[in-house]
Image 1 (cartoon, rainbow, N blue to C red):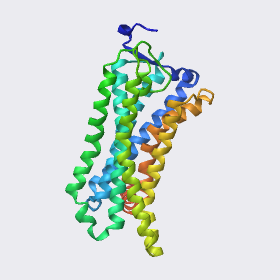
Image 2 (image 1 turned 120 degrees about the vertical axis):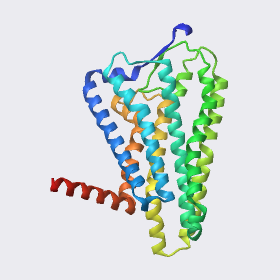
Image 3 (image 1 turned 180 degrees about the vertical axis):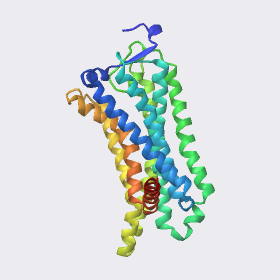
Image 4 (image 1 turned 90 degrees about the vertical axis):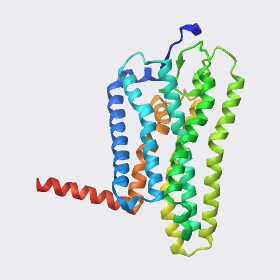
Length: 314
């Protein structure tokens, strides 16, 4: 055990398995980060510059892309640095900062998905009142809520972690997470763990209820609608459903690794499961929405066509 007063840094031991192929891993993660930034910035840029896309649904898609940038930036620059340096040791302050960013990214993502499900519910179940209910003023408030609520709610719980002293300094993961950092504490953390489980309920149940409620009503309306209306509703909801599935797959992998022993799995499988939650939603969501929603797809194709035309003239 390390002396608690001496623990000012954390060793992320999962990086040790990358030593033999660190340049390959570095290249892969760098390409992924560039792709995530490019995809999300292009999507945000298209929605921002095209006045025809200044509608509730597209603002929420833009918000999802912004959170994808936030989450991937909380992970990948630090990951690239740690792959390149040995030993993979980070300061306790950096570890805590990363924990706050990664956990709030996860809560913001789920909150945005909950708000987007409400948007789809209003669009399908109350189409004539859609623009009245989902006014731009209300959308701006909802966008602000999807950030303020997670940032403040997690901070209230995270203050407990900030007050803990630590007697060990090794986390067997590629990045810091709150549950594993708490396990390094010198004191009994039973109460902290109970509060943590209660906070998970607070962070996730309202959004889950909203998603279930919204799609229950959407399914009810679709059951009573014509075939054409059902197909239209399906096309409208498909990108959002893919985003939800993608999120829950990441949650499943994260819970599996955090709560169970996965050391028997191949190292590359462990890396894939560990990083899925923070890499695949930010890289897949822009592709899903960019290709699935016709209005965005048309603007993206128009943008590419205009650029190619300019280049051919030059």
